[in-house]
Image 1 (cartoon, rainbow, N blue to C red):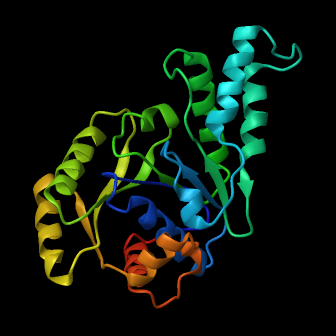
Image 2 (cartoon, helix red, strand yellow):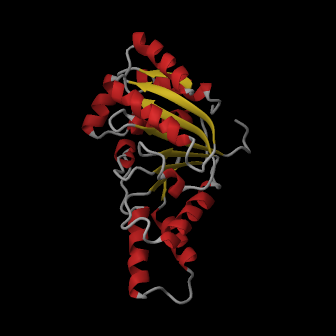
Image 3 (cartoon, rainbow, N blue to C red):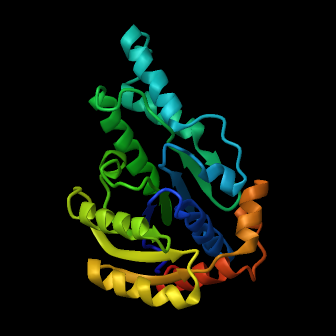
Length: 258
């Protein structure tokens, strides 16, 4: 990846497949490789990524968006600030700046679709913010319809995470189909198998070919990841030789990110 290139990467998959874990391991691999200027966006309303990364977040974008919507309803907006400027200010206030990356947690908003202006402004603000970073890494929900409400930018890489189950593969297929329906262009779409046994890797490659995506490889079950998630310990502190981290590091290299 050239230093001037700015990439947007989205990670999606069925709930329970470990997509948030994969997003965290991608981040760890990027940090280990010395990549600077990383924005991490937790766009899943469940907002599990801060816990996985060991980061405490006081407020989400959803919280400040809801505050703005209530202020609009009550006519309490400051007369000297536009709605866009006010929301942009509030979003920057909830941006968590850390030594090796910045974190923006979207959270939940009330009455989505009822406040088109606010949602449009929010999309613009997040897009503007992401352009300041070399890499924007987004942890998404399973579906992609919401992605078009979060960003108008093209997404360079879409990484679909599946576990070795029929439901996981079916969800991966639906996500691939949705990728052709949202108004965002994806340059490359990858399939990652999480918690796979080595002998199951062939299944992933076969299914990736069936649905027309690039197989990126499989991540083995890792006792360290299981224990860290159970204890609430940041995955960013995993030992460098953890099997899952080593597998994801190779995937990150394969994508040309490091």
